[in-house]
Amino acid sequence: MDGNTHRSIGAPDGTASCSRIRCKRSGRVAQAGLFALGILTGAGCSSTPNDREVNAFIHDWEANVSAAEYRVQPPDSIEISSPQSPEIDGEIQTIRQDGKISLRLLGDVQVAGLTPAEIAQKLESLLATYYESPQVNVRLADAMSKKYYVFGQVEQPGAFPYSGRDTLITALAKARLRFIAARDKITVIRPSPHEDKRSIVCVNAKRMIEDGKMDQNLLLQEGDIIYVPPTPLGKLGLAIAELTFPLGQASQSVMVSGGGLGAGRVVSAAAP
Image 1 (tube, rainbow, N blue to C red):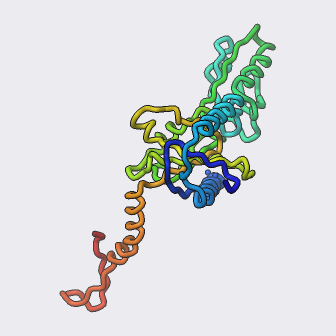
Image 2: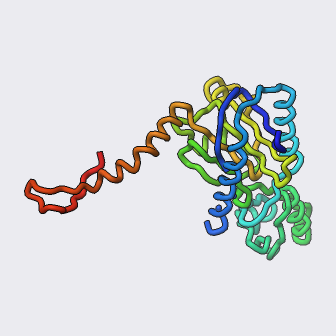
Image 3: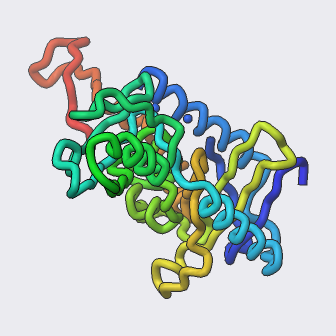
C-alpha cells in the first residue's frame, strides 16, 4: 500500500493529517508532526478491518515490548532498594549525560544502556565486596529519554515520556481528548526509515472509552505517533473559524469619523 502497512480497527473511514523536544526536543516534536502529516496526507482510515491482520499487528507490538525491557538512558531516573545496604537504600538517581550515577560507598557506576534488572545485578556484584549476599531491586522512577507523540484534537499535544508500559488509552488520557475529537478514528503511526516496515493502524477508541472493550488497547512503542482527527462537524467548525479569524482581527481596529471623535482617528473596539 505504497510501502506503508495500513490497517484499520473498528473505524471504517476517516482522514487524518499529522506528523520528534526544547532546543533539540522541540525540533524533534516538530519533525514528528511533519512526519505524520506527510504519511497521513496519503493514507487515512479507509480499509475494511481484517481480524487476522489486526490481531497480528497487536501481537507484534506486545511481543516487541515484552521481549526487550526498557533500557535506561540520560536523563532517566531510577529508584534503588537494598535494605541490607543503607548507603544506597531508597536512593533516587538521575542518569547523567556520561551515563553514570553516583552512589555512596560505590562511587560512579555506569548504567546507561542497561535494564533495571541488569543494574540491580551490577550493584549486587559491587556490594558483594562490603556485604554478604546483598539484594538490590531497581525500578524505573522517571522515563525521560524516550518519547511518543500525540497530535490533533487533544488539549495537550506534543511529546510524552515513554515507559515501555504505555498503552493507547493511557496516552489519550494524558493528552485529554477535545470535544470535537473523532474517537472512532484514532490513527497510530509506527515510524520507520524503511517504508516496508512503516505501519499505520486506525483504532476505534470510542468502544474502549464508552463500552470498556480493551481488545484494541494497543501497547505503544518508542517513537509512536498518535493522531486524533476532528469529527466531520468539528472539521467544519475549524474551517469556519479559520475563515472568520481574519474578520475578527480586522474588526478590532475600527476607523471612526464624526461623533465627537476626530476624523481619521483609530480606536480599539472589543472583539465580539
